[in-house]
View 1: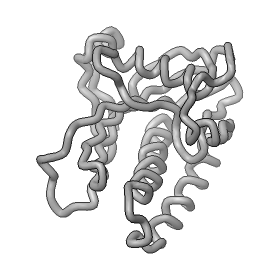
View 2: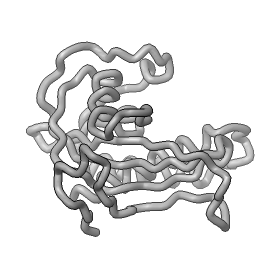
View 3: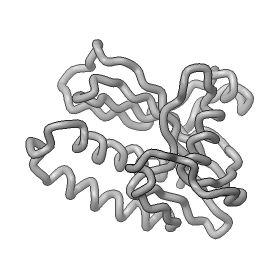
View 4: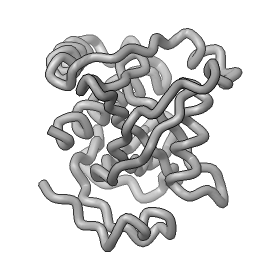
Length: 183
């Protein structure tokens, strides 16, 4: 799948047209009453060819009002990792309908390169602080994520009474789509 983008500069002005790599929707229809949530995720590669994961997902998060994707990505990476990166190129987009939250997540993925660690993570989110950062080869990530997705899909979804099931499943599927796309 190729990414259709006018130019790298267009990333900064939101004129980039992303190829949708995956749409996650548990419904048989496209919900129209969901609020939109813009998200950015980074596939960060180091010089050894490994990628950085935060537990079973990628580093990144929500784009705040007035932020560009690049600004949000840089902020999220400092918050979650304390690292400095270089954005190489856009990867694509994943659309996910989160039913419990009634939100449509439009997640733009970016291939990034690790530069250096400049600080400890600055997040104050207790859930993020519990997550483990680690480097692994993309093929290892793909194998592990595929197994975790299969395990989640075989679990009883009714045992989750909030967004936990969709969040876990969709985060893994989003990470898998972006990692596969960079290979």
